[in-house]
Length: 341
Image 1 (spheres, rainbow, N blue to C red):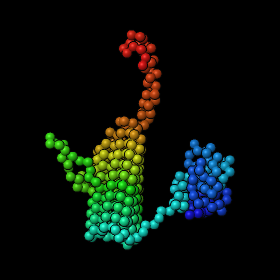
Image 2 (tube, rainbow, N blue to C red):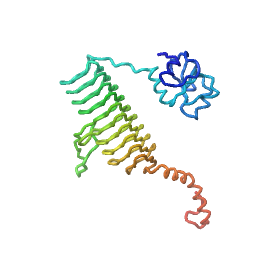
Image 3 (cartoon, helix red, strand yellow):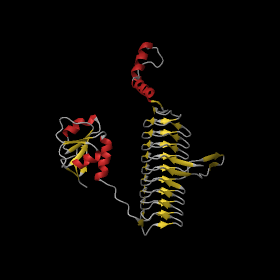
């Protein structure tokens, strides 16, 4: 689709500097953009690249002096970029109807505006809301509810009694409602504890490819409205995730942990079971949380601790070899561990 720069500026509520009639058909990075492209400056570190760019126009947070291209000044270039991409690359509308190869169980209610793709399988008593899209080879268990406008991409699996909220997107290969990891260890081995709960995913959630949200032992595993879960994320049984949380790639949350509203887990962060991560708390990449974290706190490291303390430790670690050599010199040649290492 092609829009003029003036139309884009109007949609964004931004200030147009330059030629409003310039046609814009695509968005490209600063290095790749040409005269017919729109690019963006989201961080000062890319200022030189923006000034060198061949883009016809830029999204900027403030007027960029010295730039030869047109500009659209907006409050947040990142948010504006998302809007522009939606304009230029709209998602294809789901094809309504049930494909002839799909299997639909007894008692299902599929809204006429919803789409059920090739070889999808719906168990008994499944409810599919208006405008929902179920991709090829999706498997939906008995008594599941799929909200209006939800999208299940190919090969998604919903185990029985899983609820997916309105306008939620679940990407390929994700599994919602598989058994939680619960065993009682006995002399004879590990006895499985039946996981008889369910999973409830709120509205406008996005769950990345190959992620898993386990069903509860008892009760419900919940993912709050507007939360975003990256690829390859594990959410254990009975976990409660508040509204607007972000779980980045390869992070994991063990059973019965509670994550408050707006919590952020960076890549490969892990949270032990039965802990409380307060609203707005942040866990740095590759950190391991073994104790509950107060609301609004940022933690890092293994074990995770307030990030200021972690940074001091890292600074000391970088000086450890120098401190060791100074200690040896002070203690003299007869000190334990003679010589430098």
